[in-house]
Length: 158
Image 1 (tube, rainbow, N blue to C red):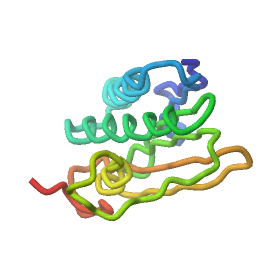
Image 2: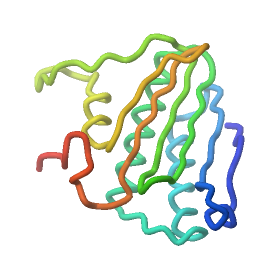
Image 3: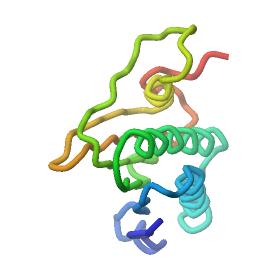
Image 4: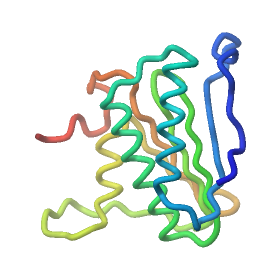
């Protein structure tokens, strides 16, 4: 992993959002991407004074895990993971070199696997995917507030 950029605490006061990004060459474990996300969330609390609940931490960790797993599994070469705190959310962005956009499958409780996109879209406030000049980028936002009124799919069923 090559950590490309990390903003320091003074930048919130200057109007810039805290962010971090890293290039993963593809041989690293997905746990390394989750570790970057957890470190970023801890920094949001310690250095920037933003409240990050356990729900947000768990959700961001799961979303990063799903998106990094897909990039590692389906795209040749490296992928880039970015995290940014802005507009009351943690934005997670993953770029990879595969231009084919993922397809959401209809809900099927009997299907084994291929539920990642369902999970991500249910847990996130927003979901975007775009082809890039090379590859694609998937960008999601996880609300920092524990108010589920802003989620795409609402809270998970218990």
